[in-house]
Image (spheres, rainbow, N blue to C red):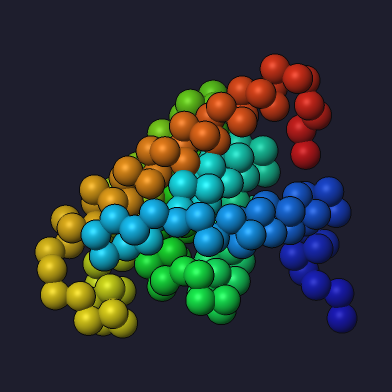
Length: 167
């Protein structure tokens, strides 16, 4: 039976998702511990790239796959899921609606830095036994997202400057 994802996404997009997932997984050891969270600026850059180049739903697929692989390999935490999902989704939606690279970066920052941070709190409390305040996640998530969004924005500008084709 043929996979429905492959039917709905052209092969080039599937390969691009795979490459972005591989990059996010390989870059997983490059984390910065801030508070109770491990921050991964590379994942945020990937969210910006995937959101702008592929759209919101393929970006979410890439984020979920990357978070899953990082958790299976022991290089991530369950907190990777809410941050990456909301960041990728808002990066893709912002870019689709407003057609500017910096809006994809702002979508990532808002999605991960605020919404993802607040969504991570119940997960951290339930799974990790975290007893702190929900706001404890906003600063580390936002710092990581800001760094990754800037990297992603720079990469997108280079992408467009060199007239690379859309996927």
